[in-house]
Image 1 (cartoon, rainbow, N blue to C red):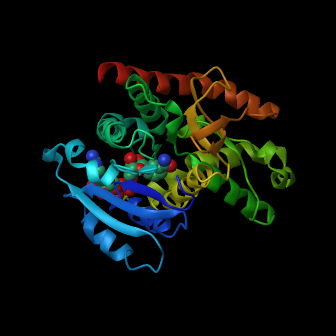
Image 2 (tube, rainbow, N blue to C red; image 1 turned 60 degrees about the vertical axis):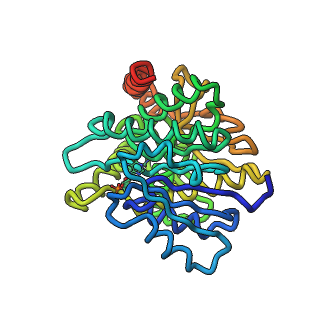
Amino acid sequence: MVAGNFKVCVVGGAGGIGQPLSMLMAMDPNVAELCVYDLTVSMVPAEGVAADLSHLNKKSKVKGYAFDMADRAIDKAAECLTGCHLVLVPAGVPRKPGQDRKDLLNINAGIAKNIVEACAKYCPEAVVALIVNPVNTVVPAMCELWKKKGLNPCKIVGVSTLDVVRASKFVHEITGAPIDGLEVPVIGGHAGTTILPLFSQCPAASAIPADKIPDLDTKVQNAGTVVVTAKNGKGSATLSMAYAGARLGKAVLAGLAGEASVECAYVASSVTELPYFASKVTFGKQGVETVHPIGDLSDYEKGRLAELTPILLEEITAGLEYAKENE
Ligand code: NAI
């Protein structure tokens, strides 16, 4: 593998997240080839998104692939997926007002399964980064299916970067501390109360009075819903998600290129009693290289972790059951 010459595919690349995510990845100097993969029914044809991005004066070669659901995409994906080092998956149905991430499970897990099976067939060495919600359940389900095929579960990553991005931005807004280098680790899962920002591990957040932390914690948990409501039924977070997804994607590629890189991500884990958990992860030449321990927590954070554990366990169990029922 030569550093700086990676093949990346964005599945759902013509969607709300997919388009800006494809743009940001097309601009990454580590990307030699970018495939925009979507369905023929997408709002904008994948070939159109690719034609548009192919004019950026960047080194990446961009190509679009549109699949008909009736074609059984898995059989047509060979050219698109073969040789991919990273597959980013923002395919799926977004939340509407009043829906939670659980409502999306059946539709989106089916979509993710189709894609993960295609990756297992054509690019079994690729890192597959799942943005499709509900991440807490879809990732365990897909990881189990991946393992059953004899593949390395360290290649499947749930993208929770947006929680880190939001928590860090909110601390910057409150404290005025410089945004560069300001980082709030976010652990647990990627929905509702399972999202646990560790403000105690961010030096800039020490300026925030302890009694203001619970509200700030809630603000991070509800940030996705604020966007869903503001978009009034016309989508969920797309631009900030693309930004966060590209940040994760760049970290994965840097790792593959030999420059180990750390981001929080939701992965198979043994750092707590839960088999899947978001914490800091080092990405290296094989994908997930090290899943880091959660570190010291404040008493408030310890209480929150105890509360979220059974909730996240239930969501993980739903994923494991999905994998059993849908082998
Ligand atoms: P969107 O509807 O704008 O785009 C989804 C795209 O996926 C569409 O272009 C659609 O044609 C495509 N698609 C659907 N099934 C497909 C398949 N089988 N193969 C290939 N492409 C397929 O939706 P949006 O807003 O871009 O959201 C996408 C997903 O990302 C949703 O599941 C949403 O819940 C999730 N999301 C995750 C976040 C996170 O932090 N992890 C944040 C925000 C959204």
